Image 1 (cartoon, rainbow, N blue to C red):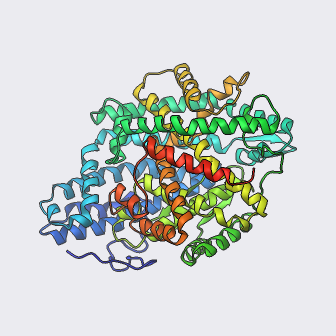
Image 2 (image 1 turned 90 degrees about the horizontal axis):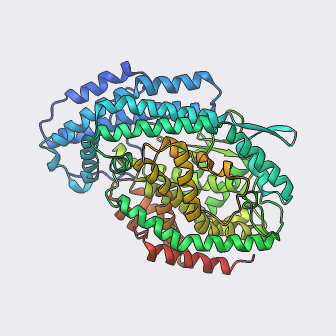
Length: 576
């Protein structure tokens, strides 16, 4: 059985007219006849099964894009009841039915005698995934997933509504981050306390939401025959290539290599600032007392300079980025009522990426821009595959796509900064390996404890978080601020909506650092490998995707230790 290879940018849509062009996929009464036709379709040969898979991909893309657009609207306007209720209606009325009919189709495919006659190199990854979907599906979990989604939506709504009166105006949490970079230490402390107090005002509500999520997820796990949600979620995430025990190895590797380097950086920062001990408002300011890095003023300026950067790196990257200027693909500025964070969401039927962020003119906004652009490149490079499942990839590799861009753009930061400030920005990103990896390990280790101890109390959770801070946290003095610190995990949105989706960032950082090291020898080879890996989408197992991009899928102490040494050597060569 042959497989058609599509050129870059080609989209296989019109060739398969199974789904009506003007289908309103937000309504189940429109979707049901199409899904039912697939469930009832007789299968008489391998070609019949292959056509079923392709038609299902087209229909799943339509329903997936409907949900994507509703989610995008909901996060853009958390204070818009119409947008909120439209998303809630889909979650309550359509998503449960989609889960049920998807389970029927999974069983139909997996149990078909023709499955083994399909080209296993082409379909093996998909068939393996569907087999796990069948194994994990429990009808009684459908309303529980709906309940969890609604709780996460409430968490987003609470966060989106957070503002403080500061500096004579109403400001969002992302906008307040500007003050943490100010050289006036008193102003930084005042801003930090204002934000911390505002977050604390809703901390009990957020704790209650998280308690509800833990209870629901434990029930989900038990319904599927698992003792705890951690083991359930690892299997549900199709983690075929590593286990919870390997995550513990990752935690140990980071604690052994990255935490000591982070704390050395903390000690140097305290010395440069002329303080005996760092406080939490001392972590973002430039330690030499230089003004904060300000890479842009307006969102349009951010887009224009990012476009110029990618065109200098590679014409194809520039072309792909410029395609985002059209079709409502960007929503960048922070504003009241907008959900926190940033994301890239591929609208799979139109195959147009959407990038959401809360830009406030900070250096971290530039990092978010190139990070999410990396996700968009991944979506664009893999969008030609007619199988929906292969137009994405395991998240461990999806984050290589984005995180690599944070590093590959380092030589081009003169598009945003003076030479001296560009070096400051490069130092900031390379230090991130020492400072971010411990946070990733801490969040992941925290979740392991939370879900293997599902009957814990709020007090137990605070005690656990304190222990995690002792193991992975920076050398910061929290004296008198303990009540803020014990709830500081609440700002990590992944804990609420996508549990256990966080270690992927650490695994990806290991991959991206390898791409960066390769680029220092040959940028052309690194970029070619990067795009080659992304073009595979999710069609190959995770280690093969890493290999295609020129990386080893390994996050043990030897690899992390080597990368930490390489980062430290590069930092030593940069001016301080």
